Image (tube, rainbow, N blue to C red):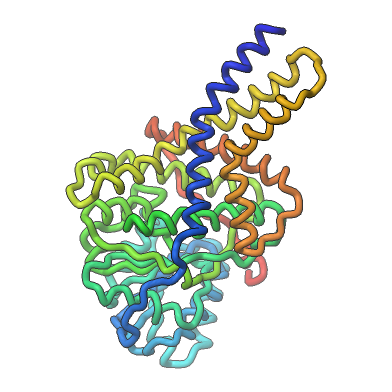
Length: 413
């Protein structure tokens, strides 16, 4: 038993180093959030470039809600169009789309184009590439089918493009069903960490990533790079290419689009698996492009590589947790001392960066988390899931596109 305890102790203390490093990253994100200036740059308001809104859809009746929010924009009606790429095969979405278009007035009908493809070549990336072929806009806005944009969305998201060097502008996403159940609460908080902390920091390094929705991209950039139809995270692939060429990117933290998060555990894990696999593959495929880019400085390159290498460090979370449990189980019984308490408290503090960021982000977004233990368990499960798919990506295994089901579809279909 002493041998088992000793082995577990060695693993436990070895795991502390990478775990502390991960925790420090989250503490730094928290610190940066607290000290960062909240004011965004003021851009020229009287700027109305031609915009093409592109909405890829696959078996999502909820797209009607998205189109409605696009039609009601406070933007010159003759300066934007809506292109829906419908790959649906459920016999519901297509019919609902047809009936909805018929119900519109003549002017609104003229602004909407529907593309129906034979098959799903390239999935979302393929749909967006096909949409670009018939787009007339100088600026392309990409929305997922579950997205709802406010009336001033187009007016605000195009403003940074007054600067000809700006290639991409990303808005913040908030979540309609964030308090639906414990899974949606966890998913919404996890994703809000990205927008409230990570992307806020990245943007200060001029590295605003494309999040795949609620994003505007200059058409010439899309014509140059295209969406990668072999990638399951085409947004990350495009982002890395944009960074490597030194284009400007902008994050509008105060411009918010509403969307949905997974509300079932299987949906959440599949979504996270796709993101982990796709992000890691994008970094691997573009590694040389990043490393040898003359347009990226050393700090930017370091940050990008750090994002990638944080994934395998997740192993330390498991080795630390389970070796700690084994230590407790196989330790000789003895009374708890003050030094034991101090060791526990200090270890808890230095390894809990993610926990504090998680709680703070939930508070920002008004997500009601009453029991922290289940989210912690979900965090461990999600970390294991991400580690597995990191190594699948590293080993160049195949991964197939997965569409996350939306709660709104059940109300429309």
